[in-house]
Image (cartoon, rainbow, N blue to C red; front, top):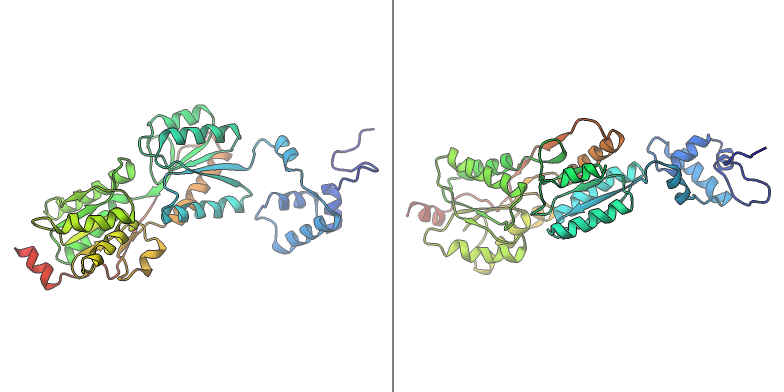
Length: 354
C-alpha cells in the first residue's frame, strides 16, 4: 500500500507538515498558511507553528512547492528611476502588500531605456513570475501591454502608461495637481510662472504640462517659460541662472518634481537669494525631504506609497482573475503649502509691474 506523501516513512528522517501540525496542535492547512505567509493566521498561532518547525527541524522545500503550484509567488517590479526617493516610496508601498500576501518581488531599474526594459521583462518571463508592475520607460512602444497579454503575463502600469485603454493602471491625476499649484500661486499675485524640469516625453510629463497650460489659460495668463532639464538636483540648481537672467524673469517656478525644486532652491542660495522671498518655488511629489528643507518646500503630495500599494493589490487581483475587466485607479493629489512659495515681496511686485 502506498504511503501518503505528507507522512514520512520509517527511517527517512524527513519531517512532514502533518508532524509539525500535530506538534503545534493545529491543522495541516494552518501550517501551510504559515509557510505561505498568509495574513489569515493569528500572530500567536503563527509563533506556535514556527516554534514547532524549529523544534522538529522542519525545512520547507520551496522548490517542490513551486513545482506543485500553478504560481511561483513572485512578481517583477520595473521602475525607470530607482535613485529618485519618490520611487523608493513607491516600491516600498508595493512591497507592503506583496510581502503580506506571501509574494517576493524582483526589482529592476530600467534607467529610461526601453531596450534594457525589454531584457528585464524577458528575463522575468523566463523566471516565470506571476505578473509585473511596470512604470514604462520613456520611448516604450504603445503595443508593449498587448505583447505582455500575448505572453499571458499580467501587467499593471504604474505612474505612467503607454496604452490607456483595455489595460490596468494605477497613478495620480497630474493635471489637477498642477492646476491646484497654479491657482495657489495666482492667488498670491504671481503672473509670470515658469515650468521647470523634464526632458523626456511620456504620459506623466504630458499630464503635468496639460494641467500647467490649462490653468494659465483659465486665469487669462500667457504660458510662462518652460525650461526642460534633467530631473536632477544639479539641473535644478543650474536652472536658477537660466530663469533669473531673462529680460522678464518669472516670479514663480513650478518644478516637475521635488528633486528639481530642491536643486533650484540651492541654486538660488548660491546667488544670495532665497526661495519664497526672491522667487516662489514649488515641487511635486512631497518626498520626505520636502518638509525638512529650509525653507520648507511647497509641493503636491501624490502619495507614492499608496500608489504602490494600490498597484500591487491590482496586480494580485489580475493574477487571480486574468479575464476580469481592466481597472484604472487614479488617486487624488493634495497641495501642501510651506514656506518656499512665499507671498510677493516688494522686490517681486516691482518686477511684476515693470
